[in-house]
Image (cartoon, rainbow, N blue to C red):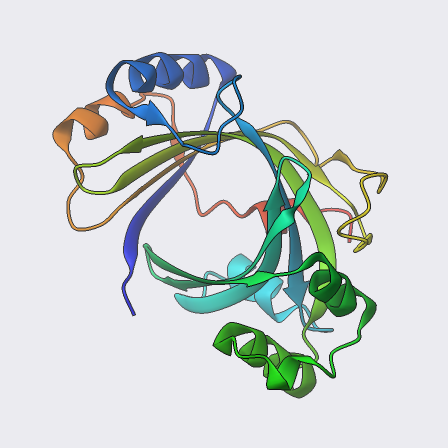
Amino acid sequence: MDYRNEWKHVISYADMLVVRQRMRAIAKPDSYCTPQGNYLVRSLYFDTPKDKALLEKINGVNIREKFRIRYYNNDISLIRLEKKSKRNCLGNKQGAYLSPEEAQAIVDGNTDWMPTSNRALVVELYSKMKSEGLQPKTIVDYIREPFVYPPGNVRVTLDSNIRTGLGCTDFLNPDCIMIPAGEPVIVLEVKWDNFLPSLIRDAVQLRSRRSAAFSKYRFCRLYG
């Protein structure tokens, strides 16, 4: 399993403007961006009845994993099941595509089709739904402004307007009520493979940044 290096920082609005200006000068927007240079991310996170994933994050467990289903810009023609694994400051992401009907079936608890899926990650999710009680927990929305830099396979993202669906798990419903998740925050994420080019390192240097093990899922579980 290949892991990537990850930095995550909570930054101010002024810092975001600085990083955006720097990155636009040296990197390219992600190919999935809208003409405005960003996109909407909607994720449905899974957890156990006793909130294993949430508690592992709060307690700083070094080796952990979480499952989510995700799509972008309200386009349900491209839905991905993802498993995010963490080992200290390293991260790995595995994925498998789902049809809208499959995603809705998972939300509704209709899982009989999953063991015979030809996608290993779907089978693994099914196994953990049955053995650990893993279940859909809450929807998380946010706006992402992404930049890519080929040397080092670097990806820099600016995430803002984080919103929570509270206990809503109606993932494909565009009318699901979403509310701001606590006080507004902006999250700077930097991911790379074996080396981080000095040009990028300099571009994301901010005196006021706070390195933080920030989790949007944890942030959006503020209300339960």
